Length: 291
Image (cartoon, rainbow, N blue to C red; front, top):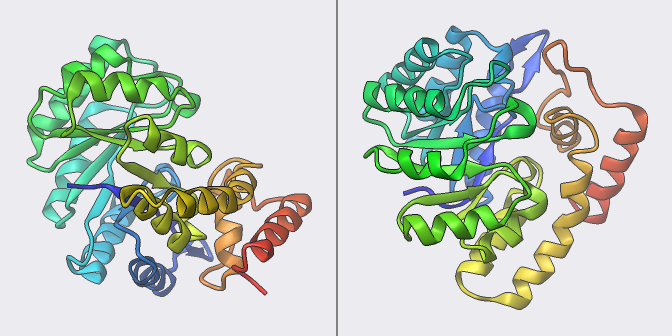
């Protein structure tokens, strides 16, 4: 259903308001560059600092602009189950094609509580749900047994795994079969993730180099391993540079260098420091992304 190169799209701001023209340009550019699906209102899109009304507008713009050319997946995570349900139902009403839901941050629910959380959200919507495991930011991991339990719920169709533990991928592929979606959430290991049994990457780097990210996935799918290795190595410095500081600070600045938006972030995030700016500019010049 969803696979390949999926961008976790930034949300451009100007004077602390959503820059709608910039957002529309980014959506169209991503499709032109070969991106397979688009996540709006994810953590890279600063969803936790946007209101429910702002998220509704972003999903609405995403759905109407993309117009079924590729799937639009809405991030609908919240700290509590009731708000996650409300956001998920809102996304379905607005025409999203799927949901990406990270574990509730900060409160560290047990594995049984996580299971009940996702089960309740899945029951509230008919949309396909991708679980999102990001223990470095949410402070809790979706353990393998919990993923396996949740996979038995009809509309829980996959997992975005933002951990360097690649053996999780092979374990889940063996236990869940070929139909359960396994997506990398770590650009630095996106290539390795494919070899471990993954289906693609929900990517930060695709904000900056969508064509290369798409071609990496397509090269693997066609088993053009020479091209795959070449692109893997090309992307490596950019993957590293985009995480020198907290995401999405570097990627927002990098996209501004492409001329699509301002590097503005919602507080408490700040734009990157001068050393990071210089590193990003140098890396992007090396890839031929900017002059």
